Image (cartoon, rainbow, N blue to C red):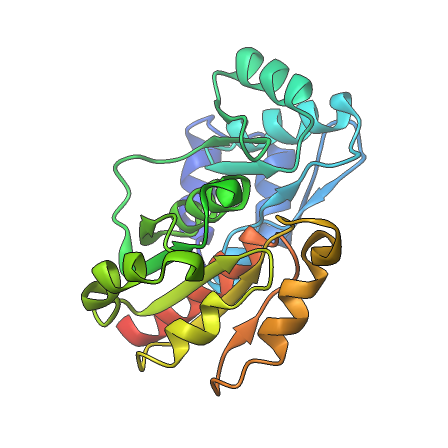
Length: 248
């Protein structure tokens, strides 16, 4: 049973929700009008983080029904990994924010209080497709994020210019491609939890991020956690859980 039952019934009485929508909220899931998707309406109450819609390979009509349903029930939304033509079409039809660098569309509450502090460091500006996904996901989850780009190991003096700020954070996300060395450097300098985010940036032997991922998993700096290649949403979710846990 939803912990927000009173709010659901109030919105039903006011005509803001249909009986179908209200029933879905109480049950903990809602089926879209085309019947193709079951939205996990209780995820935030259950896990602390709302559902992100993974958009890759979903038909446009399916995505359209999902977005329409979320907007009808006055929710924030984040849809990731979209073809940019589809993303632009959704953005225009529903007045959404489109971020072409990571193929995402979103509608976020700009007045929402953001909790905690996550710092994101990226090795180079070629990592921006992942950086933008992390930024959007952190804000969607409700955590404050600060980004520092182009601080990779090929010019390590650039990292030292931001190092004093790292101790203020609840968690650090460190994104790097090529050989993926940056998380080890960072984790050897601070006590803050470090989440390694391997990026598919690099030449042939970088193997589209696999080399960076294996390097981070083999880090000699103890305690580095690692998410999958280019998994900005996963890194943001891990950092948000840490931040919320520290602030609770």
